[in-house]
Image (cartoon, rainbow, N blue to C red):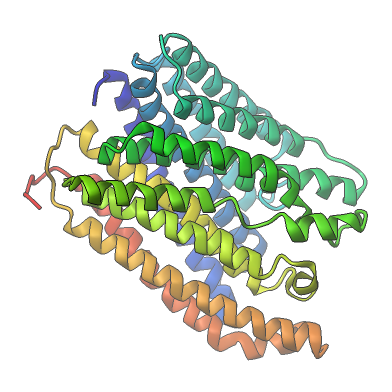
Length: 441
């Protein structure tokens, strides 16, 4: 670790880790509602509330991870200390307070109603303030540098896009089609636009520092990533416009421009591994490398393969809103962004704590456990979604009758979710205990 202010990232990683654990808890609560007919929490945490908390915790812990990763990355790329550690800490506490208020509000019924953007307007304005503090601090840090790298330029572009897109989710519109048209500007252009660019920049930085690969190699794939996001990510928003009253041309646009954004990151990792093999580089922090490679593979499968499998309009007219969508959502978010955060955390944490070697066994167990059970969860939801699509959409059975045929696969999903939770607990324990016993790998 080159700069003292990089330690600020640790606070963000702590909150991200705790919120990740809480998200898993609410995921188990929400999944139980599919399995058991009796729900003792029905009057306290009905399904819509527990689901809202589950998915909002996902977004918030991912953002904390992105912010922490950025505060670790930028000083090294800009070759200077963070412009204002005080602002970084203010941003942390303000964002945490908004998150706690939002979750308490959902339980009390204080919600805007739109999925992923349930936060009342006043809290959204607070989030905008947090984003402005963050962007100002990062931009001023970069302005102190005597050099601009492709990584920090791409990262800044992704962060600005992330902040701007959120603005379209603040205002309430009377026409539901118009509301959902711009709602997707936040939901889709975040995850398949801004977040993809941020992912590319962070992944390039980790691979560069972890393996010593030539900077030109990872920057080449970053340029391709930005180009594909601008080309396919923006136009690919059309696959969300099929059924909300928008013009028919979105069927063609959405059907053609999809699923290519993860490709450059996959090839960036493959190219890096080829370079490492040729140079016969020995990587000490193999745990971070495993998460990086796993992120690229799961990102490609979850966002690319599982996404493309049901985004063509001829398929999506049947699968839209079924458990097939839930399978894609779990796979894509975990593979693309949760694993990215864990990659960055496992790369930065040993350096923040001053560890040259550390015991990686528990971290490896967490890696394999979470990935195995996530795949099991996705497969269970996929089978449930195919059953739902055929019985409900093709044969015309009513919703509740169809749910009865899906019960077995919901049970498989829920048991797998407990397995995933064990892996997540391993990670959380490992995060807070890493380095306390410095054992060679």
